[in-house]
Image 1 (tube, rainbow, N blue to C red):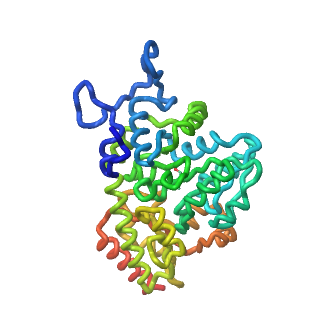
Image 2 (image 1 turned 30 degrees about the vertical axis):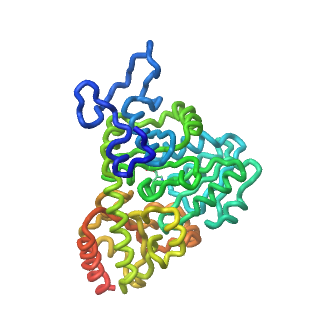
Image 3 (image 1 turned 30 degrees about the horizontal axis):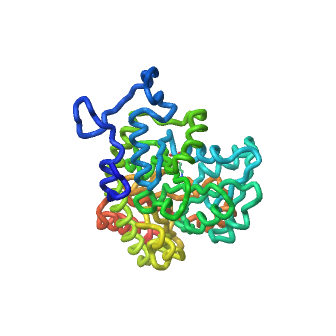
Amino acid sequence: MKTKSLGINTICAHVGEVEDKQFQGAISPLYMSSSYQYDGVDVKRYPRYFNTPNQEALGKKIAALEKSEAGMIFGSGMAAVSHCMLAFLHKGDHVVLPQTLYGGTYNFIVEEFGKFGIEYSFAKGFSEDDFRSEIKENTKVIYVETPSNPLMKVTDLEMIAGLAKEHNLVSMIDNTFASPINQTPADFGIDIMIHSATKYMGGHSDICAGAVAASTEHMDKIWNISKNLGGSLSDYTVWLLERSLKTMALRVKQQSRNAKRMAKWLDKNEHIAKVYYPGLKSHPDYKLAKKQMKGFSGMLSFELAEGIDPNQFMKSLKLIKQSMSLAGVESTILSPTHTSHALLTPEERANQGIADGLLRFSVGIEEKADLIADFEQALMIVAVTA
Ligand SMILES: *Cc1c(COP(=O)(O)O)cnc(C)c1O
């Protein structure tokens, strides 16, 4: 199947299926075997080699979604992040990272890189100069996350790919927040796309997985180290993730549409001080987001007006769950200060622009009217008692 010309929903529904030659079932059969014939076969299959029938099939779907040659599935988003970084960073090498990173990625770097003799530095901001000035003689990788968590800052992907080319670096993006539905970084020349498939790819808050898309050349290097580190995913979960991916475009488009409508509604509400969503014209990165994103994602953050207690507000919500993680079909809300960014000092949070009253809203697929009704009733309670 030529995947390049297929539309996004067709890729989600069809690409990379395991053909059921025995019974001609409509979906991929699940192969739970951890042991395969080794004699007289082209491929010696083993789950930790990432090459069971279901792993291989799902890799093809990930590759097509990210417009790349190859795809690989991992046991978690962090397995994908760590295996990719360690594939291209060796003792004495250096990586340039953005100022704001997913907490787990930040911890991996500051807690583990010293042991491997890998150097790193964080860009002071999001501009070309901010990234360029951190590039050194021994820099091998430039790594970004856009839109960022939780303030939805957008980094220019074409600029990052340009810097990588100029300095002969491998460029990597954690594309979790956008998902391949809203952003395909390969279009702008980024080398390696990384996902926590626990989020939009899984989409039902019931799977922990990771995914990577890249050229065959880059993927060979990632595979070489990954088979030693051993972060592969069980075939049952691989199969469940394939099922989830079939509806990813439908889900993410609805989530993004809802997020845009909710951002606009929140922006006009007297009890909301500030909204961070790249789909709002008032967002500083609106133009850039419009250029490189197909949709503005289902994630947004906002600050309540002074005097309203964020915890009391969250507890007053009935439909929207106060919960960790993101990207499920159900809307969830959390306080970054008490969860994802709890390990930072108050000064570090302030430097990143994360106010104590900031709330991150992962918008689900519910009807907009029901989401607004939930916000209204909660605001009624907390704004009165404030
Ligand atoms: C959740 C997340 C990760 C880590 O993924 P896990 O599946 O929890 O290991 C990495 N990056 C981003 C942006 C995330 O949201």
